[in-house]
Length: 245
Image (tube, rainbow, N blue to C red; front, side):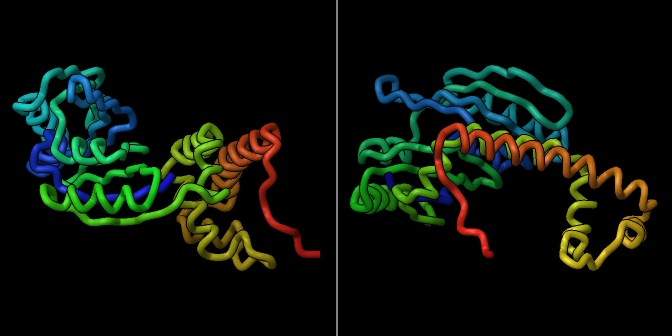
C-alpha cells in the first residue's frame, strides 16, 4: 500500500468551516464513509483553550446544513466528544471513486484538514490527486510506501504502539519538564554531565524531589517499553540491529 498525507481545505466540510471560524480543534479517531448513503459517520474529539470558543465551534458544527445527525456524547471543561453524520464532501467522493481511502485519524484546525490516504499504487495516487486538484485546495505533505518492513510493522503492532503513547500521555507536566531538562543537560550521558543536585537547582526543587520525579517518569516509560518489547517477542518478530562488541 502507498500512503499520501494531505493538508487541505474542504469548502463543503462542516469540520473545516467550524475550525476556521472558531478557535477549536477537531480530532477524528473513528470514521466510516458509506458509498451507499454517501454520508460520513464520525466520532470527533473537540477541544479548545477557551470554553466559549468550544461551545461556539460545537454549535457551528451542529447548525451546518450538511449535518444529518449530531449527538453530544460528553463534555468536560474545554473538551467534548461528539458523534456526527453528514453528507459526503467533494474530496472524499473524489478519493473513494479513484480507489483511495482514509487510513488514519484526521484533524481539523484553523480551517485546515490533515488527511492520511491509502492507495494500492503510485499511479492511483497521481490520478486521484489530479482530479482532486480541480475542486480542492491542498498541499501534499508526504508520500511514502508502506511495503517496507518498518512501515508495515507499525500497523502490525498498533496495540504495542498505543500502549507506549498512552504512557507518554500519562506523564505529568512536571515529569515531562524534569525528564526534558535531565536529557537536555546530560544527566543520562556517560559520564553524567549533570547531578540530581544541579538538576534540582535548574528546576527550582530539591535533589530528593528531582529523584522522586525521575523515578516516577522512568517507571511509566520503562514499563510501557517492556510491554512493547514483550509483544514483539510474543509475535516472533525480530527487531533491532547488531550490538557493538
